[in-house]
Image 1 (tube, rainbow, N blue to C red):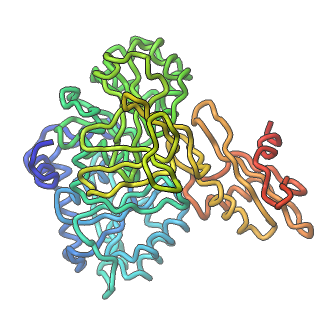
Image 2 (image 1 turned 45 degrees about the horizontal axis):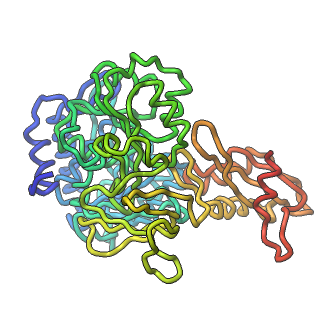
Image 3 (image 1 turned 30 degrees about the horizontal axis):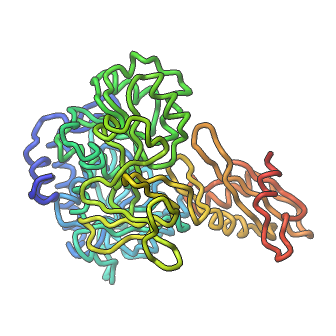
Length: 492
């Protein structure tokens, strides 16, 4: 990106794009001026509701066209957004609204449930409903939530956005990032080579995640036309690639597995020059099969919410230079990022070829090193190889699940004495969580659906275990720790 601030650049795009196509949602193209007018309408309602500029806004984000206007508008202005997952039960969304204590809550009309309205009223939050129907975007105040209460409310603390992490440390936390950090969006989309930009891109990731926000921000900065998918669909994604002759695609590992499973014809992806991804590990055999099937290199990388995007990646230039010599690596650092591998106990950098914890430093985030729980090795050529996680996190299609958090939720059921959760290999999602439950001897064992609902009521939906086994007694070691290896045997 140039030296122009991200906010100023996005303001120029929104206000100057006019009738040019911006977002295709469903069968309709929405223009830049429509997105601009939508955000202006939101701003007018915030002003009328008495919401000051120095107060953060809670935002229940969905992958819908009206939500793109809120994100780009907040980024282009001075508003701070605190994101809330939409894919949660009304009870959990209401709990998040209460916890954020924001001066205003912006949510789709579908998410203004009685629980959400009651939570906003209790927090003294004004409520703004956004919706689209028949090709028209509608913005209005929620009845009974026309004015913000006296507060004090959650402060903005700067022109920031609180992005939901993928949940590696438990319930997804809000990582506060300066909006200017999203200058990394273009690097994440083009692997550091702006010449790889294209006229049309596809947005397959949810806006509550860093991937969705980077795709939207980078696409807007590059003035691309963007095809927005509310939910990933192989048919819809491939249709967009074929229709607009898209040169590069970037999806998650689970999405690549779905494309292969659907046996998409090679000619449908004939316009592709390369493909990339990195939100989760991808097996070498899947990469090899994709490349052989479609004749394009699949370039993998690595990033995280805390790093504001991709920090390690294969690029077309690296692939040309090294070929398959570094198979299994997630590449080298992109411009603006540094990485090192350190000893977890001493904090000292380990020699090349030795395993340790990966640490990352990103220029737009400041001078500090950010430590991950990812175990890694860096070779003599600076390529990084990942070797799992130190926190046992399960990677479910790019969404992280910490087993102990799911077990804690299961223990909330009155009949559950204890629970343990592990990850099993899944052909599409990579991994899925499964649970083993030990019930209280004086109570009847609950049904699987009942136990799954307990998790759904307390955590985002990707934490819900795919299978739940009820046993008389969890297998334990002499020190009474659960024997994880024996849990795997139960599912075998």
